[in-house]
Amino acid sequence: MTVVLETKNLVKKFGGFTATNDVSLKVERGARQALIGPNGAGKTTLINLLTGVLEPTGGSVWLEGEDITRLPSHQRVRRGIVRTFQINQLFAELTPLQSLALTVSNQLGISRRFWQPLGRDARVAERCDTLLRQFHLDDVMDVQVAHLAYGKRRQLEIATALACSPRVLLLDEPVAGVPEGERQEIFDIVNALPADVTVLLIEHDMDLVFNFARTVSVLVNGALFAEGPVQAIANDPRVKSVYLGEGTPHG
Ligand code: ADP
Ligand code: MG
Image (tube, rainbow, N blue to C red; front, side, top):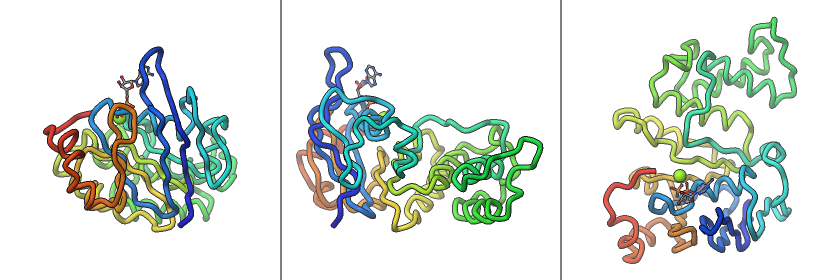
């Protein structure tokens, strides 16, 4: 198997507090890998280090054998490390079609003219069409984001990330804050992501983790606590005691 994304002895300190503690993590091509751990374990911090939102205090980040530790965020996106955020970051006034047209135009290197409607280019329209269907957004493609159900907004976030043609897609709690009744649709979408896209998913919902992941990495207090096939992790008494047994965590 080929390792796509790797961290070596990654450390992040906030003042005297160690949020990421000597993490050496490997993500293989085409992985369906989940990153779990109690609230405050350092999951989001790790994603921020992988995407270049934060600079590490020590250690390194590698993409397909290349040291990208000092590479700024936008250059990592261009190289295919794309994330969704835990908090909604969509433009409220745009519709799903417009939002996707914007991203797809950018991807295709088509400079947008403000006096032209978004998505007029045939290639853009076709790609948007596919994404809207794939992410179950075709029925709401002309509804302003501000008026979308929360679950649909999350679906649009994932669609937008996929529109960036990621090699590695990092999903930070895609169902966080989504009402129970809207979760299954997001589960389905996450499970149906293209097989050639490597996916690292942070999630608290164990149903989603166990349905989606083949590999699970457990973070506790900033450090990698356990790692392995999903069934082994589910049955690991140490993992149960620190994480699965603690009730319903949030964050
Ligand atoms: P998780 O996503 O696993 O819930 P986080 O990565 O968000 O955890 O946070 C890990 C720890 O690092 C928490 O204790 C949090 O308060 C701390 N932390 C995160 N970001 C910052 C920051 N910018 N400054 C100071 N402390 C932070
Ligand atoms: Mg988090």
